[in-house]
Each structure stands twice: as structure tokens, then as C-alpha cells.
Length: 102
Image (spheres, rainbow, N blue to C red):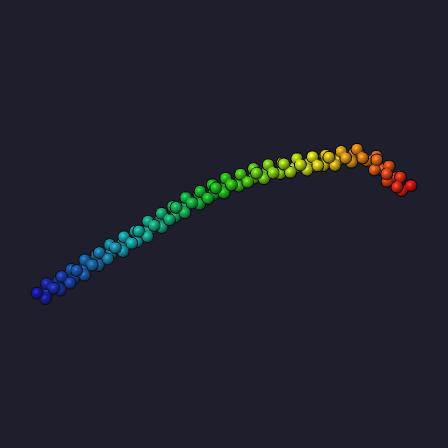
């Protein structure tokens, strides 16, 4: 009878250790799968982010180039107006300066 109880305790302990070992294996497998999935998702997110950055950069460069062209055109028009004004009034201004000096 005592040996039956001891055998049951030993068998129960053995089964408990086996179950615990399986649980630990499952835990390790789960952690590894989680890490694999996390790395995969991280790489996917990085890929998407890099694409978005390239897309935004391309769009912003296009916008900046358009803005630069607009500003260049505006400055050219202003410069042309000033140059025309100077060309039209050069003789007048020179005569005024000479008359003021004399």
C-alpha cells in the first residue's frame, strides 16, 4: 500500500515534470514565433515608411521646384521692369543730376 502511494506520487511527479517541460517548450516556441513575427512586421513597416519617405520627398521636391520657377519668373519680371525704367529714365536722370550740379 505504501509502495502504491509512493509509486503514484513518483508517477504524478514524473508526469508533472513532463508536462512542465512541454509547457516550457511551448513557451520558448511561442517567444520565438513572436520574435519572428515582430521582426517581419518591423521590416514591413520600415519598407512602407521608406516608400512613403521617397514618395513625400519626390512630391516636396516637385513642389519646391515649381515654387522656385515661380519666384524666378517673378524676380525676372521685376528686374525687367526696373531695367526698362532705368533705360527709359537714364537720360532724364543724368540731365537732372547735371542741372543740379550746375
